[in-house]
Length: 425
Image (tube, rainbow, N blue to C red; front, side, top):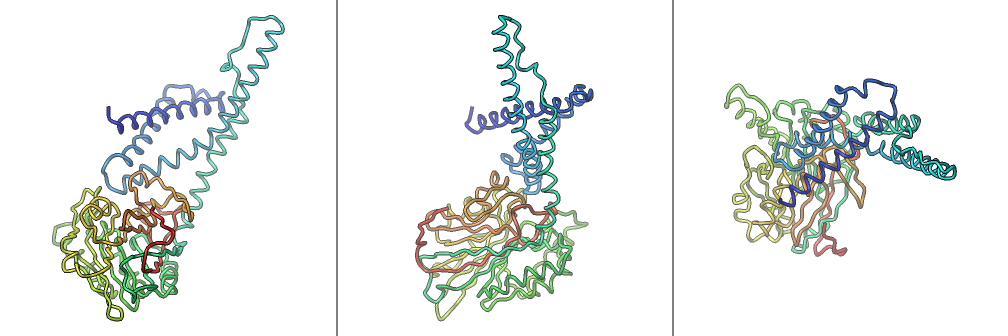
């Protein structure tokens, strides 16, 4: 048996034991409800539990689409939060029952009686059980209420990007990044414009957009093209395509319609004044010195769709450039191909994960269920001399809400030399 198979078995066993414990607690809270003791309820309870566990395992171990993974992980996480909140009440009640049993045991021994009441026959506290269920429901309700509030709560994250070979002319220059606009999900133009104004207020010297302009159709940008056309910078705006930008998630009447949609999307980038990099590169020049900006089409290790990216084309004629910055939508590309085959790439910029739009994120700690699918899912990573930054997205898709993982605008300051902190993420 492999280590992974053993881990799966242990995870399933632990989760089933928790579910069994919770089931006893629910029956203790409502012991007068005959429904809870019927076979139909037991079957329903275990069927839901198994489906939720299956969603977790699919999300973590199977190579399926990001949407299906995110859905499975999110449902599991939300239900598991409720169970974890309920568990302390169960444990407290079991401790109470054990103390009652010990007290009764000493009384029986004092009376020289052999009739000892087993601990499990001492009834549960209905108050504790109902309080536990209520407490378990509170975070779920709070999450539901808070979800829509995070959709347009744009936050700026500042990141120093240390590059040992960075030319002196670029030392201190500012780079902005946004990703995953997903314009088809928007319903508040004023809020979207507010985020763009936040980006422009930072006065970046150049800007990256790392894919997923739409959910699937170029027409989704009709009401937002004028807003994002305001995204300009002195040294240019450079963009790349994401998995949603090819129309692969929709049904098209014929191949010609899908091709026309893709052509319209490319034209949208041009109309906004963005320089879309389709497996190609640009030389960015400041005071006679140059660095390379490379952009590939979508390439994801876990995607069921074609890998459109061509690193061989994107890196063509860049051997003389001291620094190469790569726009690649899917962060799985970094570990699967860039680290392995392209050591000349100094830093890669991605999006795609959205941080699953659910989790916690602080300066020194972050967590989301998506981490069990994408090892690099948010923020800055470094291995050896190569770096990756994953932006958790400007927009949203699938889940109409964000909890803990808020929409991001990233501002980098490029710095020549090694990171003085010596950090490796």
